[in-house]
Structures are given as C-alpha cells and as structure tokens.
Length: 348
Image (cartoon, rainbow, N blue to C red; front, top):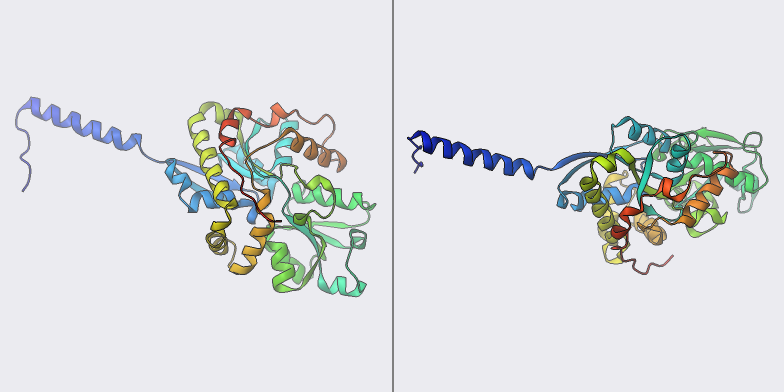
C-alpha cells in the first residue's frame, strides 16, 4: 500500500525537509576515496593490502585503491603530484625528499628491518663451486629497481662494504618492477639481483634457479639493514594539516593490519591474500616468506632507525650531510596510535 502524498504546502515543506536531512545523513557517512601507492609489487605492501582485504579501511569509512610503482622514486613523485594521498615506501625515500625540500612525513612505521636478499643466478654460482660472496659480484650485472631508490642505494652500500666500487666493479641495471627481476635474470639480462620478499624465496626455494649471496631477512650482511625503519607510511605535511581525521583513520587501519599480520593464527589467511595478489606463487612459499619476516612488522618509528637510514644514505653518497632531524621526517603526534600496537612473539 502506497503512503498518500502530503497535500498541504506545510506538509510538502516538512516532507522536503525530511528528505534533505536523509540525504545529508547518507552523504555524511559516504566513504572517503583514497589512493595509496606501494613502491613495488612485493610483500613490502602487505600492510596496505591486508588493511584493504580484511576491511580495516572500510571500517574507518575509507574506500582505498592501491597503486603499484616501480620503486620509491616514482611513488614519491606521485605523492608530491597528488595522484596518491599516501605511499608505502622505504624511509630513505622520505629522508631524500626532505633533503630536497619536499614536505613529506612518515606517520607510521610498517617494517623495521629490510626483508629481502641479494641473489645470484645458479648457473653463475655453480661455476664457483662454493657459496657465492659479495666479492663474487665483481663484473656482474645486478638488477635493482628505480635508480636512486632503496634497492639501488642498498646495492651500492653492500658492494662498497665488501670493498668493491659500484661504478667500476659492477653494473647496476634498473628493472621496472620487483616481480620482473627474476624474469630478467632468466632471460639473461642480469646476473644477480637485490630483491624483496617473497621474490628471494621464490627464486631460491621454488624455481631453484638462484642462490643466496646475502639473506638479509635472516640478519646476514651489514648490520645497517636491521632496525633501519625499512618501510613507512608517508604523506605530505599539508595533507595531514588539512585532513587530520582522515589521516588518523588511515593510520588506525594500517595498525590494525599490522596487528593482524603478526598474529601467527592468521598465517594461512595472510598467505591466501598474498597468493592472489602476487601471481599465485603458492601458499607454502608465502607462508615461509611470511614466517621469515614476521618480526619486522611494527608501527613504531624510532630515532635510531633514522640514524641507520641516514648512515646508509651518507655512505652510499645518496645524500650529503647533515641528515634531516627526526622531527623533520616523523610526525610523532601519531605516537598514541602507534602505542596501541601489541607485538606478538615471532620466530625468526
């Protein structure tokens, strides 16, 4: 039975007012659309992916689209240009941006330690007849990501630490996308690579076409890669100033995702989510990779982490002294949200 329409002008006005209030209520609860960039297609982006897939963004009233980039440099450019509002990228990208006078700030840490490795094609290591070392990279082509990004800077640091000259003793080859590095190696375009999880596990344990030179996830290699504030959630200072409530929501959702990631009870679900996103390498390989790096996920960004990142950048000649101060890089007004995180024991 249809409700009779109001006949008097007063009733018409009342009906229109109620309709307007209803529309306003709907609009007040409309989701906020956001684009979040991830600097490469690897498990580096897991906190953002989990926040989206498990509904943590939706719970905060956010409709998030994920955009992948071929390294931190293009991701940072997109953030400055406004095509994304946040990025999941290496802290060193934030530091370099601040040195350039760009007002980028980290509002939460995502991973404390670098999770990945330096690997070399198995046919190259087989010729050595022993476990390859960094010194064995001399004369080889090493695949990284964007020139000037974390993979590039880290590769230069690692070879210099081993007594090699990055400009003379090796050839650094930028590869557009972490998921393409193994393909480039199998095509004979590179001999070795600096890769992020899970690509090292896929390369060594699944394809068996690569060997480890340095398993950095497991603490091998230079100590600078442990506790350097590997990846952070970054935005611009203007965005925080003009959209504080939305930024709080994003940080809360990401911390909820970090809490979900470190809980061993969620390993099977995390592997299933990652398997769909990263080309279905297999649940077992992703479980192995996730267990290896579970200890690295935390929202706390420390001054010590910035010191290590600064050392990495100075030693690889990526920046000149002085290193930006902690207050220039990290927005500690979000610390009460960071403190809501409860780490769970995780085996390394």
